[in-house]
Image (tube, rainbow, N blue to C red; front, side, top):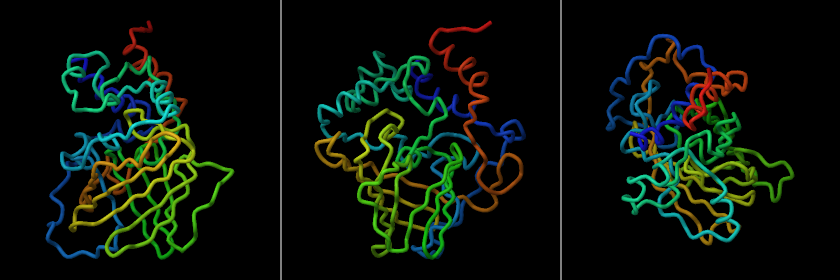
Length: 299
């Protein structure tokens, strides 16, 4: 039971922290069957709301075929700097550190078997800091793709972030003075695959929920391919010579297209507002979730 608690606590605490009045209202409809996967589609049209959640808006966790919240289990060897950062990060997602389940599942990288209670963790997201790219792509909440001639904008429901992928032919900045949580991104089409290259990241974010590090020299390539009407597949490659001795190739991730019949909690079609508001964090997260998980109680 404790191990299960460690695996889900970040999800629960995030929902408690997010400022969304809609969460207190009626639960949404469950996801209706999407249009047939055999329906005609334009592989270059990614417009729509895509989700890695198996019940649309309303919870249920990541769909089985969509992949987990980790970048990938085949983690390259780390440099000395990478090992130092990795050991300093204490995630609260994954199998509990020292548990029987952690000892048993040795096929999983050690980074997936070291979760601690949030009160003992160092995840900066728990203090309402941005998750950054690629981590936010790994969360199961919906992503709204808005595609125009010169750009693609991704609106993420989780923490209400957005990110622009420029399609106007510009080049990535060489060494930007201003680093971004989501980096600088440019894209182009290679046949039916959208290729996105990103650079200029803030090195303080984590690669994924398991607390893998990256530096401000990280480069990320995403390859999106719409494999049928309802399914968008994503493959990523992370290159960061400061942290990893070779490129890290992700496990495949999949997104499912949400049909327009799906509504959000308040009856309004579209992604929810899930802003992580510090004003709510003390009562909703720290006192109710994080501290009790670490054995600290409040009267």
